Figure 1 (tube, one colour):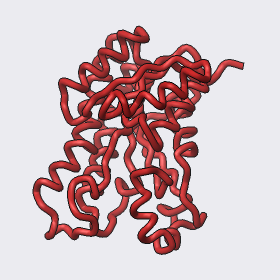
Figure 2 (cartoon, one colour):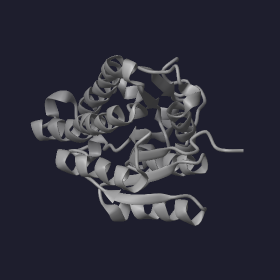
Figure 3 (cartoon, one colour):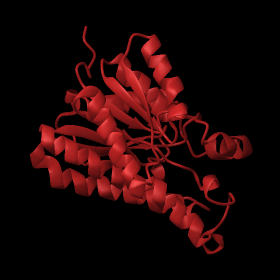
Length: 255
């Protein structure tokens, strides 16, 4: 039986680890050719090797999503390799620890910390969408999924920069969905809760028990659980879904 992405080409940012890697592998399993992008090409190469060794087709691309010229080149390289861009998963992101000390409240946070977070987690998503949409308009349609977070729907203590960026991702997703609904371009976002990835490992090591009291399922999610939802959202099976903010969090947001 053909996979639900058979014949499609996809681009995944942040594909070198975590949710991005799991989604790249799941897309390939479902028949897509996958351009795996990460901050450096070497970071994406291991994921690509896993796909190609399993009989899939993938290429590695290095790109900083905060740099528009690199984003434009990333999309162009993906299209050059596969002829079109049917699915895009804008997943590259950073945590507050990447731009400043952990645990800072809003008044303690530097302007550089706030701007650095938005540059990757919000402006990076915008830049990817911008150039992906240009290609999708030219070819007659496509599907985009952005990685937001439950932090895009609620507040979190000592993470105002991250929360602001992820709220922005939800907003830009909804606006783009309205703008391109008549162009056969669907735009949705996925809102993961606490997922076991390299990015969340430091926080989990410090306060796993505390955080799990807020999750009704009392466990971390896995990257593969997010990947399954993203693959479905990119597929034709989700053909009437656009502008959605899809929560996958073990019940955190409902509690």
